[in-house]
Image 1: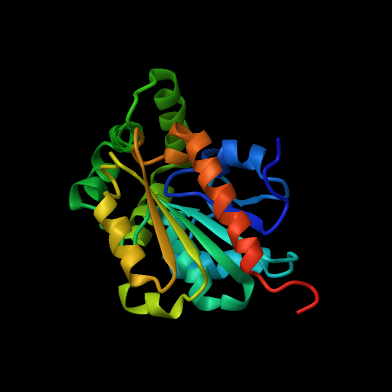
Image 2: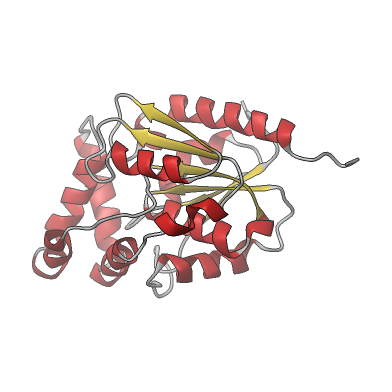
Length: 240
């Protein structure tokens, strides 16, 4: 059953991914939208979360609100930039497996050059706490199909993301979700993000790594639905 009909969530995927990484949520939330960033898989990729956000703004600015921007990993960085660039478009944020900064180790970038398929497999395998070989194989194939130039642009965008000094400008309510066993964006990075935002609530999802929205979809859906319901009560009504 659909859980909510407003505010409207806009889902943005992470590095090397597509809107399919929000499959359970897109099926559950009425009126939800998903944005495929350039290069994922169509078009040329952009570099820099701020540039990605500027592109997203062009896609969403004519959509009737209120809009809640929902971002996973690098998509969370994009969502934060949207909130900074166009606060008038954003009623709230849901930030999944992300941080105010997203460090990317040198070896990950180097492997794109020397062992691209191996790096895709590593990234996908580390996203899941419970390894389902079929899911990992399909996920890895999806990342590989986009090509090394897309993953490189995504990694460089994550590496260049650091809005720690700007978080106090983002005053809308935020829900921060972190997989307890996430090796790619550990919970301390999500905690740092939560501490820097003026109005943020953080929930750690047990039994999940980097993709809690897939690995613990029911839990994530209920948390997001409850948070959206609360947000709806806080938003000004038509008569205000």
